[in-house]
Image (cartoon, rainbow, N blue to C red; front, side):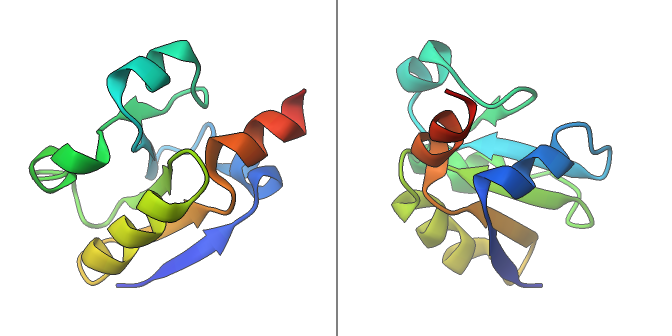
Length: 98
């Protein structure tokens, strides 16, 4: 498997995708304050346990605050899952919609 980067603009293409899963890697409080529509919350610290059982044929779209944790997660799990990370994280996404 692999990982690649997408922009917050490209993220729109994945919002209603049945073959992908959008994962917010921030803590629960940050997630509850606002997240990408349809995203599930798996905090970075819980990722190893949290993605167990997810079909590795699904494309995982990951984001965090600014991109550091999603990049680390993609490096760690990119050999198991096809991962796309959102460049600039939620800050980039919010900048696009505000």
